[in-house]
Length: 418
Image (tube, rainbow, N blue to C red; front, side, top):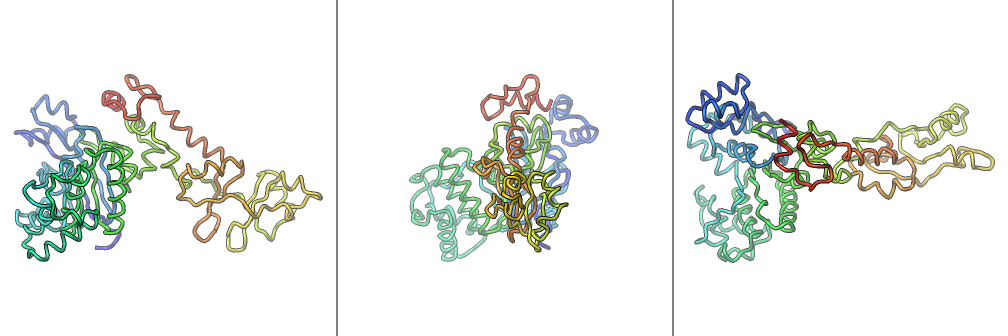
């Protein structure tokens, strides 16, 4: 499998709860919505024709309110819930075709899961809890112990290996749950709201710890949450889920900067856009002049029209900034004498919040790559316009006011998408 091949591919996945799933599925395929299907059959459509891909080593976050179908979806990936229809591929293998023994092996080795509730065995020590999956695999006691201690070391709990789980705080117990999953060295980690029961500060620490572990171990993670800020913090890609369907899938920046509809916009309107949106989204082609062309009449005309030009060398690197007003103020007026060799610059991946102080200078900002080559320009007015766009989102009828609390009310979100 090439590095570019998705680790997980899900196509038209459906999960229906009830005693007549075939009837419900037929109605779903004919275009009925989940409320109509429930009224007609008494069956609940929890996941409705969901399709997505997760790349190797990616954190893919599914975010939605209670009842949106996100926890059902993640349990379908390892067939804790049997899907009613669709395809579910892991490394190009359809998980739905696996027999019970094959499924058991993939759960024990390739796919691990961390739940919201810690699910630790109270009568076993911390290390014994972490060893559990290895014991089921048939790993020898000495090797189990070594791997459990290694996993506990990853989450900062090696010193607590031989105490009972009851002696640990909630955050520490969740670390044990994470260590238990890591001990089997999984390729895929499924996480169902694992941090939602933790205090805010502990939760933030766990989010950062997860990011660091994923970067080190290169695991593929599917993470479920109802918290948009958590999704934006850890997700490489985010899916917003409602009524069993994906409303929008994109990068954190896509979700915040270009919400697909009012439902998503209500989630994102109170997000600090400056900490999510990058320079790449708003940069423009730069107005440039080669340093060898300074003093050329045509270049001077371009400078008067543009007001500012970035000076580049023969390799396209930004080496200066020249302003029409500086040339006019020079005595005598001379472009080469007015070049600012110190000028603001940034990278395309920088967040807009990082530019606030620079924007106060009122100068165009050069966007340069790692080699210093000019990739574009950002203007202070564009930065402030992008940040102001959040206030342009209007709540639909029945929705909360734009100065409401950051978390939208469920009824408002329903109204937005209904």
